[in-house]
Structure formats: structure tokens, C-alpha cells
Image (cartoon, rainbow, N blue to C red; front, top):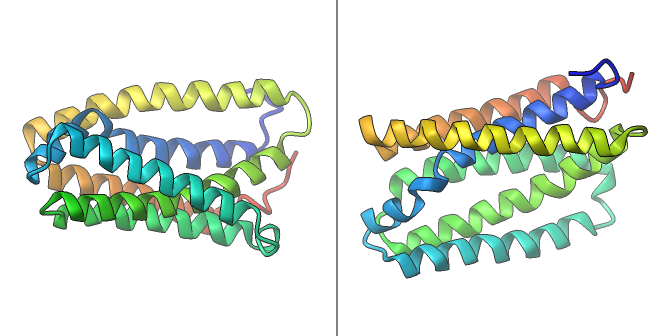
Length: 189
């Protein structure tokens, strides 16, 4: 990464790419998973709607609370841990209603992570902001492509359970990095 890409920026991008990788491992197999628990293609759409609407509500609520700015790192870590818990909860999903519930939990986790990560990254990019956002955005798409391929391989040769455990471990590692390295306090230069 370019020299102007500070340690804080790199750490935030790495953490984001880890969680993008974890979640993207499931994306191409989501409809297959939904059908494997007795759901339909319509249920896959409903589940994604549950996730998207929950994310929208929680992002709006979390990011606008007066206490948010004083606890950004806490929201970030709780969101990553919530994502890991949700990834692991898929192991126990046996029907579409449980899947819908898991998607609401995933939406809550994302609703904690997104405003926290956006706040930290925005604060970290004082100059060349378009360049830094482009590095992050391009990275997320590249990582999502690799993750989708790997997720397909894992499900094809192992199982959804192995996939969900892998996703959970990656999200827990992102939470660990956020706690250990403290992206909110890393030096900007």
C-alpha cells in the first residue's frame, strides 16, 4: 500500500476486508443453504430483506445516538463479535423462521459495525480521501470474489458447517485485531 496509507488506515482496511471475506464466503450459496433448511427461493429473498431492513434500522439508530462517538471502538468490536455469533448460529438453523431470526441478528451486527468503521475510517483519511476509499472499495470487491470461490469449494467438498465455522473464526479474528490493535488510537502518520 502507498506510504501515505497509515498504520491506522491499513488496520481498518484489513479488518474490513476480513469481515467482507467471511460474509462473502456464503453469498453464492445462500439460496442453496435456504433450501437445505426447508426454505424456498422466496424465503431467501425474505431473509435478505430481513437483514437489509434490520441493518438500515440499526445503522440509523446506532450512528445517531449521543453516546456513539465516545464508544466507537466498543460498537466496532461488538459488531464483529455479533457477526461471528451469527455465522456460528447458522449451524443450528433448521427452518426458515430461524433463518429470518439469524438475519435480523446479522443486521444488528452490521448496524453496529458500519457506522463505527465508517466513522473511524473517515477520521483517518484527512488527505487523498477518494484514493483511500477507492483502495478500500476495490479491495472489498477483490476479496469478495476470492471468498465466494473459496466458500463454494468448502461447501462442495466439506459442508455448510465447516463454512460457518470458518466464517465465525475470521470474524472473531477481526474483533481480536480491533481490540488488540485499537484502530481508534493507532497513529495517523
